Length: 399
Image (tube, rainbow, N blue to C red; front, side, top):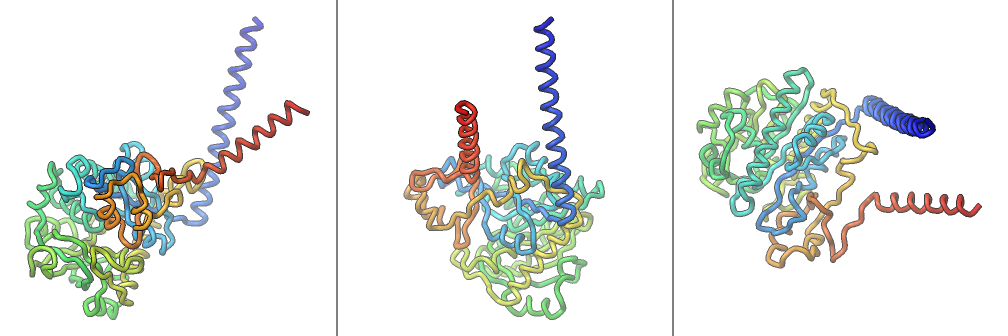
């Protein structure tokens, strides 16, 4: 009888503890939700791009340029990095808390720098995000998506052709070898456009007259191609450019911006995040004209204003800022050159990929510098708590 009573007491104690913990978590979640609603915190996800396979580094799996983060933060967004190779249940957990997502550029189609598994995994994640956005918008929960460069091209194939590519080489069937690398001009079409409307008439004239955007692509969606024609059925082609021949064929008219007719999904072939925060990219000068800076900022502000329409609320982890970009460090060229675990022949190629603005690196472990592991930002807090607890225990033992 005594044993059963003790056993019952233990069970009751455990139940009380679990109930208490659940109530505490509920209070924290509710507090954060109220805080997010009052402050109107806009949380934007950025999906990372696969890291180079020719840089033999098992610790790094993906990356993203810091200019994407700065571009969105300049309009007041809280950034959450979404690693492209995350398991889908985890990715869904993040998506449900985001107000919008940015799908960035990268060279995942290049067979010299990326393998087939990376390409298929990236395509799978990109399609998963786009399907989630469609579902949310159909359910009357506004969820905008911004696609840049590589993701701009792959999203166009998803919406216009509705197919999954099996090889990287298959992209050449839909895209034309006609690109530009360097500063360029922005030519709006007469099609209906939300983004175009944020610019005044004077600004639109300036965008055609002075360098206002930065291009970095060797393939494009030709306006007269099969993909271009099919894309025009589901999206408004809002801007076009003519290839200069700096990378690929010259004189090809291609799509440089589109907006889906049915959903708040926007795509640009150029890089609006670069002008304010980068100076040189692929050995080409990034435009620093007044209109280039204004174009970048207004596009950022437009997307954040779109994201404010979403009803999703960011709660985070144990702390409000867990899983956000605040937990990560920017790596620049100097730091990359000090990475002892990289082989000598791969240091230069990885430093070139990093660029002058720096990148965020992601992987299964923290990246070592000069033989030492980077400090865990929470390490000192944990150690302090342990030392305080140990001191309390000593005081109890020795009154």
